[in-house]
Image: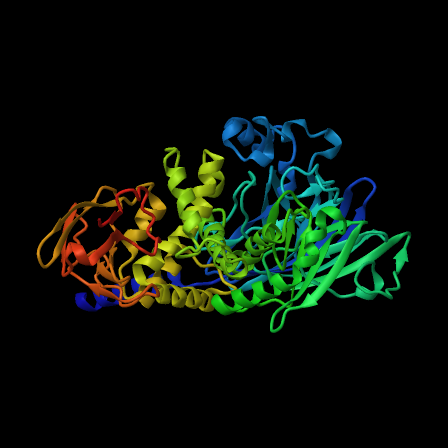
Length: 613
């Protein structure tokens, strides 16, 4: 009897644990009617939001983001910028002083909620600056749907960061993160991060958006324009339908994280079809400063083809590059970028980075606020890979990431690194955020390629996209695939690289030449253990590589794209020195070195190579 109870209890616990770890994701459908007062830079909005709770949890409250409430003096964003001074985001300050502190009263961002109803019943809500907490009239039970309706009005803020009016290039309205946006709910709970200036997160949603605006405006947006023949800019023979001098724009989009748009009277619209890819739109002010855009079409076409081949196919029917914002920022089916560019490589670098967020932010939608290194870092990796093919460097590099590695080494010397695991808005130093997020996130993949071999990394990236496209993965999900593909234990590397600021530093300590062989002593002077590819180049230009595995992986790299190698005895991670004897005499050797491929993020390369004389 007692044994039966124990067995039953164990079964119940296992079922509960299974429920806790089962994947789910929420869903939303927005229907919006927006009326814009272009002269006053305001708009009024009506929204019906159908929200489906696919979680096993009963929800008693809901949360919305009101991002524009950050753009005013003494907001949390302003306080953070002021507190960081010159160590903060340079775009939010001037001479170390917050730009938000001087926003005129009539240009402060505002999203004023008039009322909210759930299934027709008005509900109480509480505004906590950029977060709105809604007390539900009735719980949203698991696997059920509820409907929110609301009305609000908004003031388009002075353009400070990403959103706003009259950016530095004269674009009238950059409408990003502009509507009351329901927060993501998942196993970690509601993603209710205050908007301090960094990243975003949201559930996949469908959008049906109607925008009424002065008929002389052209809109660029991430979505499908349903009535191009009735508005300005998209069809040569369009018959603009205007009521009280306003045209109506109808946009739809499915399965996206957000809907963003921009409006200006001087926009031109160009479009072209990528073979087996999206229809691409360029929406920008055509002038001398933006003339480089005229060269971009073939590069953008090749860009999408490379991305589709290397990572997985772009899922949406269109993509728009829109001039707006304050630099570059990705959104669903579009990006806002500055229009001015010195040359085509500079413009394409920005387009390639922001476009690649369609893979590593929109389709594979990690929580940017919690793990910005997965979003920005993986995107930077894709950008580097593509740009290396679009614009091969004049100086031959052994891999596309050599300059990124050099930049990382120079940064480490400053002694201000912060762990990549930190939340995006909680980094203390703007430069440290950049390197922890963009650079270390990019090098996370470069180092994995070095550890497991480039073929296995490529398989991992494709499998990751295949398994998690249109979902919300975590780093644990990515690591699971990498370990499965490679057969290696990689948890140790993940911990060192993401959770700490410890560094890699190997060197050649000693070389002894004998009559029939050469003995090399290597030393680990850093805090991060790694496998080592040790190579020799003979006097007849032959390269031979010896793979020295670390015991931490428990399985050795079988092949790599950088040539054949011989696997030797592993190097225990607790052991500081390693001795290797190779069957070459001094007269047969030209160069000895650690990592001829130059992928290893060794912070001091001065003792990594020996030229034999």
